[in-house]
Amino acid sequence: MVKVCEIHEAIKADIVHMHNSLCNHLNAHTKQVEDVLNTTSAILTGNDKLKEATESANTGIKEIISKVSKVTATTDKIVLEMKTYHNALLIKPAQTNKMGVDPKILSDMECKAKQILVDMHSSDGDTLLNKSLTKIIDKANKALTLIEDSTKPTEVKVVAALKTRSKALLLTLNSRNAADWIREMDIKMKFTDTFSKSSHVRQRTYNLILPGIPITFNLDNAVHLQEVEEANGLRVNMIFKARWIKPIGRRRPDRTHTYAILTLFSVDATNGLIRDRIVICGAKVRPKKQKQEPMQCMRCRHWGHLVADCKSDSDVCGRCGDNHRTNSCMNKDKLCCVNCKDSSHPSWSRECPEFNRRCLLSDERNPENTMPFYPTEHDWTLVTRPAKIPLGERFPKRFVVSEAPRPERRQHEATRHASHKGAPKGKQMNLNFTPLGHQKGEGNPPVGSILWMAECDNSMLDYDNTDESNPLAPPGWM
Ligand SMILES: [Zn+2]
Ligand SMILES: [Zn+2]
Ligand SMILES: [Zn+2]
Image (cartoon, rainbow, N blue to C red; front, side, top):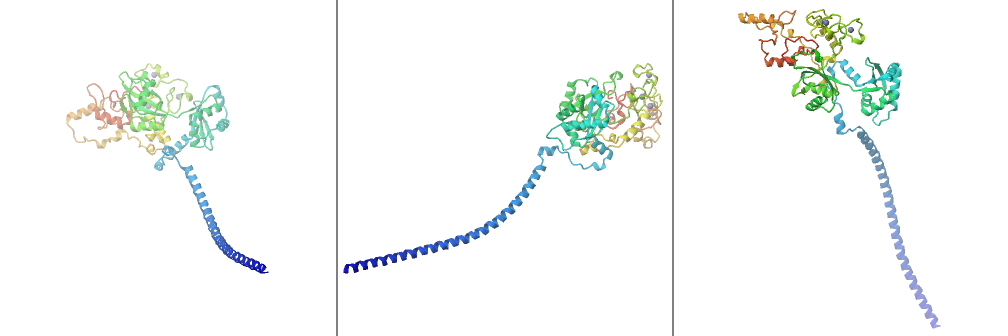
């Protein structure tokens, strides 16, 4: 019985012990659970805060994305509009002095920039030229549509056409860009291949009048022309051709230098030579732009038309005015101008009053004649020069320096000069107007006078076909 009681006590003690340890464990766990719960709630609170922060961050990010997209769009635009340094240099400078330029000149410049000249050859060319302008324009536009090229402007269209006397077509494009694009070598080949196999896009050329070129210079020799290109820093093949103005057969035997016309492909190079002069055969000469002058018919010698449109029944001699060709003239001593009937000059003379009247009319029609340079987008080429003052008016008689009674000897000299055959004919003698003749015994004019005349006097541009000697010209200059 005692044993049972002892066992019972021992079991009870164990159970109590177990209960206590369970209670302790439980308490410890409860505390841990509470800690966990606390931590969890803290995490949850943190999560809420995180959520709020995330939402606010999201809003911020959206704003940033919106701003970045705007910046990207702007950057793209800048990149599109941005030009390389090379391209920036190629861009033509902004205009600043076009305000004072004749509107007709500006309009002509714009018109020329949009034009291309297409030469037509053989019977195929004739067939196309016989079609109406509308059909020609349609054909040109079809040919342009077929050309595929990455640099092709958005719109390339021929808007007008003109048939020229020299079997060519002058096509006007819708824009400068379109015309520039067609002028590129590969594009113009593609265009003429489709437009007409017998056509060729002609390159625009610019003429210069060169004074004082030695007659020993061979203008037909390509090597000589290359030397001129090298001496003047011109690109290879920039010079198209060169020719003498006066036929070699009509050249005076004592002539050593004369006028020539140089034709170049580049307007900028041509203007550069007018501005800076040109070196030929080691000498620097001042070239002039070739002006638009009245045309003279080589058959009847009248002004205003060419042989192709001449209505005259017979040839008229430019020297004597009789009915025969000029080159078969036997009246070497007879002079008669067909236009003004004067016997002091031939029909081609630049001294002819009718020629000078027609020149004034031509200047009025072509305001570009008053410009020393070929007008381009460069400001300095748009300058104009006033018309030349005639020599008689440049030194009016009222300013004559010797109004006071002069010594006998000087009066005698003046009388001698007045009776000199080089004095202007039919004009009242101006005492300031002393001809610098080059007859034997008179001596050569002072060097200073030669330079002054060469620089200032347009009348020195006596590059006509006349055989008359200019009384003001020093030997060998013309
Ligand atoms: Zn005629
Ligand atoms: Zn004759
Ligand atoms: Zn005349």
